[in-house]
Image (spheres, rainbow over the protein chains, first blue to last red):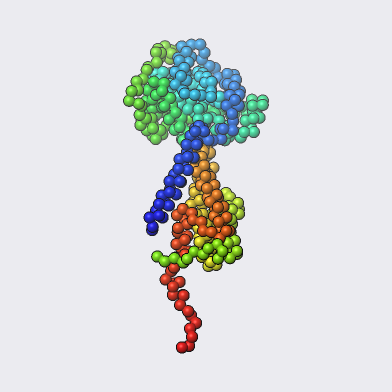
Length: 265
Length: 162
């Protein structure tokens, strides 16, 4: 082959790589972390949808308010939100009185944590890690994506314009009980690890909590709902272990009397 | 390596110019039929090439250039189709940034290919050569190189008796 043929081949490769990188940078610049089904539902619609579910939860689940645990949760929330660069959500964290060890996110940045989880956590950092993971699901719009998959846009619009409460309850059950897929869990983990580091909370807390629960799960405990909804396989635990914080990272522990918090539940 | 001399526009018949142009334009119709399976245009190019290559060296060159330049675009678009189908078959339908970037890349490549094909078709209609990067050189070499078989065939078959 002639030299000029190789030169042409090289130029074509450069053009190809250039076009691909150009496309990638363009996608990055547009800034959607996931171009998925969720973009069909606006943040305003999501907030409205969240409000409907909030009312339903308010009616169906007893919640903890104005006690040491609630104020601890608000402290954790403030630290995490301060570490977020930007967010389209007005986050609300609420404790549900229930012995199960679980946490879930509903549309509109509303995150619920069970009192059972607060009791099982050995420190506020561990709760922060679970909440950061749930915020990951919200920020990556996994909840809306899942709803879109199950319901379609038309159904969501119908619900927003005054849906049937029994349908809403059914959907809520599905949100609480269903798992996200492995890729979504992994993305939420990655989000949580980065957020925890920014919030000066040790990212290791995420792995520690789940590993302990995994061990506990060997003696079957029916309250370990979170392991059903958040299956932590080896790959994900590995992801947490491998996460490297910056060299100058120094965790700042919460000034919370955790025993007192657990006592108030 | 020896090559046949290039004909100049005035030496090329109108019919030849039209056939050479057709190699590029036919692909547009084939693309429209082939969507979303970007294979029809390649098949059409192959058929067009084998039907027309013997007509003249000018047509041979253009139809081969159209065929060769079709291959990378077809492959790129095929990857996009297969990738898209795997996303569709998965449960969550999550479309990653990488896939969007690839779609933009495939779209840009196809657009670029359309533009140069239109230019090539226009030049071919005028009876001019137009060389694409890499494919132009290969097509020229295949169409215009003097092959040993050609040299033998130049010997007259009918000879006088003495």
